[in-house]
Image (cartoon, rainbow, N blue to C red; front, top):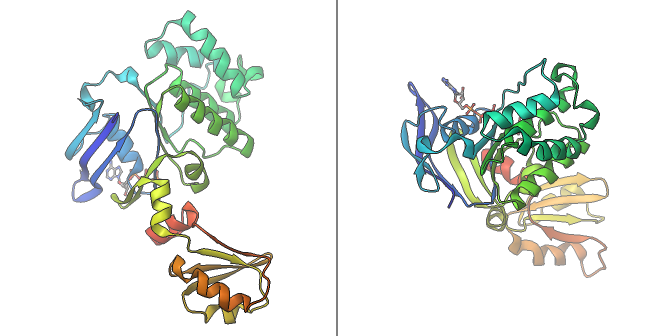
Length: 299
Ligand SMILES: Nc1ncnc2c1ncn2[C@@H]1O[C@H](COP(=O)(O)OP(=O)(O)OP(=O)(O)O)[C@@H](O)[C@H]1O
């Protein structure tokens, strides 16, 4: 594996921000770290980047302790955004590329490529302070990987981006993965995690509630979501055995089941031998699983 987090704990005086956290990330994988505000995501990132010491445990990159790893191997988009306000977009990207060890000539192709890909061509000579928040974020994003790091850490990269820019970023992350970059990111938007991640870790108050593949997480929960169109009332559906929740939707109901084995008997009870034009069992979305696991609303 490329990154190994081994029983890592971070304490601030008596407060434990990260508690015995362990996970690994394979080379070229996209790994999502999710959790509510204060769950310990940024603290974990900062320990991986050696910006903060662990209280206990070890972190290594390709079996080398993280504090011995060449900094240029890593790229980081921090949560607190900030770029040089009076520097142009283009100069900014050259600055960060050169700072992290690349030659200016060698950078030109990549700077041009990313400026175009993130639709910033007409802004390349503009001072960063004159850009919209979303455009500033795109510049900072490119700056975080313009030196071609092997391992890229993105703290909430999607926040503040409109749907078009979200798609641009999605595609860019997948492109970087294809090129072999290992990517760790956090997001409050579960749809982004669901679409991108190979593996994920769900943190609650510094403790991992789940670490593994999205597929395993979904299968662990099972196909507990049942979407139907029926003449039965909400009240009647509530009384059926195995149904834990009923939600009215635009054109029917979504039921949550105790487990998927109730599917067959519910089909018989609800259809009563009649044709049903909608009866489908499905896995919960990551958003639903997350809310169930952490027992709260995503903020
Ligand atoms: N320097 C510090 N001293 C004391 N407590 C801290 C310090 N830094 C972070 N914490 C606490 O550690 C916990 C984890 O914070 P962290 O920033 O890692 O959370 P997060 O998951 O990134 O949250 P968010 O989604 O809001 O960014 C929080 O309760 C925070 O208040």
